[in-house]
Image 1: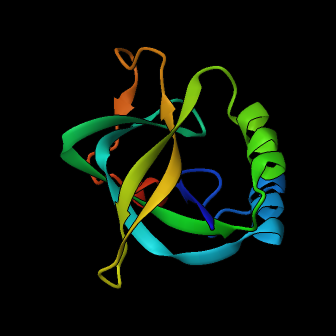
Image 2: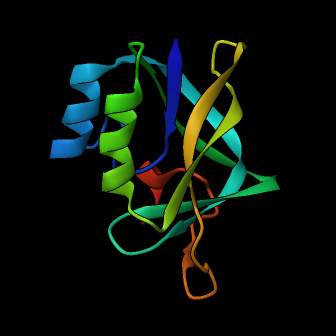
Image 3: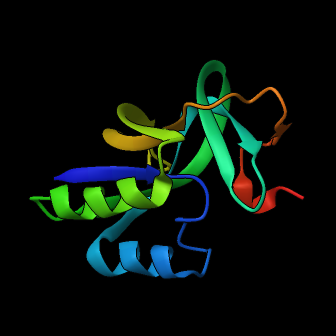
Length: 122
């Protein structure tokens, strides 16, 4: 099974074409978090790895083979993001491996989201 951790515009509480695309092809596997820091770019967030922070999000379980779904999301995320596999502790206590889209552009001028939760960010 392929898992994807989402923390921004693909979260299940967000309504847009791409979140519906993901929800129609995958199954929500629970809430979790990853070690990192979250920033607001504009209407969407950016996540960078950082052991001192925590980013809250959702895990989707994708049917295998998941390459087609991930390729479509790669295009959505653009060259500013890079996909990597990370450990994701889930709310139920399990830890699973999942793909995440890390932001690879500069965060120097971005506004931090201290809570690590895009849904609760002002």
